[in-house]
Image (cartoon, rainbow, N blue to C red; front, side, top):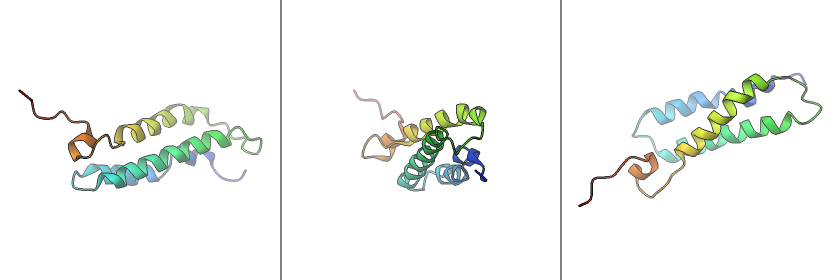
Length: 95
């Protein structure tokens, strides 16, 4: 293969994900979609490594970055209907 298989893990979309998640005014759906996209691309890259045509040795890149992508996608996953729920912030105390 002529390309660089490390781009499946070190994807430039992660930079865009950092910009999207930086501001709290940005819609969280965009951040969630980008996080799922980067995690999916990373899983596809790991799956392609099982094929004989992809013979690039990149285990040192896959090992730290694939769990990071999966953790980001899980961490940004919307958990409720409100903004506070999607950020997993504690709510006001109830008495």
